[in-house]
Image (cartoon, rainbow, N blue to C red; front, side, top):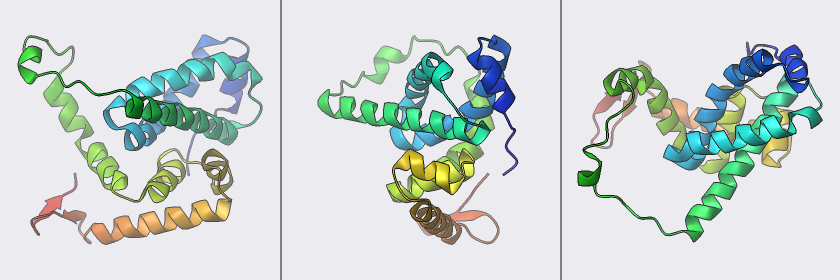
Length: 194
């Protein structure tokens, strides 16, 4: 799948090398964040932070290669996401009126960031529309780049079940996309995927 082999960096990070930890973080975080966006939506960054805290804490006990590390990190992230979902169900939501937020400045260039992430958000939105088992299988196999065996361990399923769910999810996505990369909108018009 063209993913960088981070095995040596994982070993160095286990011995306390901060630069090596930065390398593994930069290699794994983007896919992990996309995976979490489907599971927990806008809370993905918070859940990812919790996952990375556990990853950093438990890193010395990890044993395995580059693919094993990605699977281990995805498992931790998935468990933190499921914990988050359970907490959300127990805790009532309090919506803050938008009028109270007008005086809060944004620390970054919102317009630039929106343009930069438009195509990723569109893809994640399409994946999120799949049945959960298919969405998770597609994210773990395609976005994070895990093999079927490792993705199966993350999901608690057999590798064949993961391959089947990923295939069905990808087939369903292909049906949603037109030959020229368009998606059919709810009004029957085509929405071009950036």
